[in-house]
Image (cartoon, rainbow, N blue to C red; front, side, top):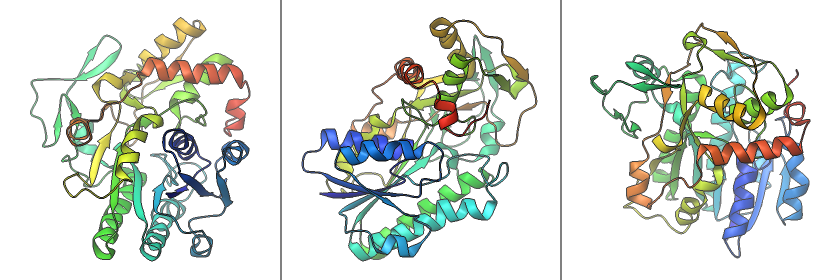
Length: 357
């Protein structure tokens, strides 16, 4: 089997390439990356040593896609994954959609012409912001927890956000680019007869992740804690109680292998893959782990909540368990340990990731 991974030199793309090569015999992997993300160039040599062909190109360019070899499957990992992309920073809103939607459209044209299956690595941030922001929350120790006695919107429960929860705007420009990509991918699959899977993932984290506050918060927080860089809790009173579920990319590899084995019509096209309740952790809880492993630190608090910030985002992954027999294997603590070991071995990692002190 020949597999094309877009964004192959990013954290998720490179992690999936390595893990799939280790577990799937006879797999040939090649990928495309424009190396625009600081740090992505560090993965080129290692991937090539493993027999992966890395094509330096941009999926926004149909010409760059057209010259790629044939593949049986494509895993689309190429995206700007920041919820503030197109609003803050140097990337404009049009550029965000060029990366995340137009790029995916070009890849779908490749799948159409080459008869390749398509897997989109999507995100929990496709879900509607307003009902999530208005949930009634309790502060339980070091983390927020939804009130059990509240009236729950459809698709939302104490177990988390399910696939039936709404994706109506606002979802952020980033979320909109991914929702649009999901819809276009499913339509292409129906119209042109190739299999499509949409995997909505929680906060992905692990060793080798490029650490930035807006994309790669686990790597950023642990590296910054270790180096003595300034850290602050932002929003929700500056308490650090906001919760996300954390997932290691290697944990979705068994499902990817099964998805590439065929297009079972009984399986759901869209499925959540996140840490779930067992993988949910607050920023303050991550700080408590850092203090125990790395020593105490002073942290600032910035109480004002930013647009698109949410107090509690946890994926309900019970559909993945029913359909695929899937559960995440790694706990947040195991992921933190892995990131900390990597941080200790790479003292310049934040600078490699394009972050200045």
